[in-house]
Image: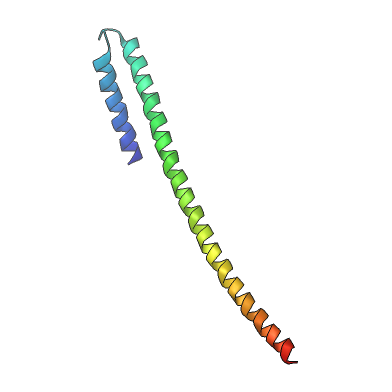
Length: 93
């Protein structure tokens, strides 16, 4: 899917550059405009991809924290129960 999107962007850049070229006989202008569009498209694609990855990483981090906080709570409850049993055992003795 990414490859097809980049191919579509490249084709669009070529068509747009060709349409915006002042003189169709000058290939340097066309080449320069295509390069500019390709650089812009590449930067936009990298930005979008990094946002998606950051979002996935943030989601994974939140999930990890959530899971470990719940585990810590469970262990604290178990520790309190054991402490109460120990306290009752020493008070009875």
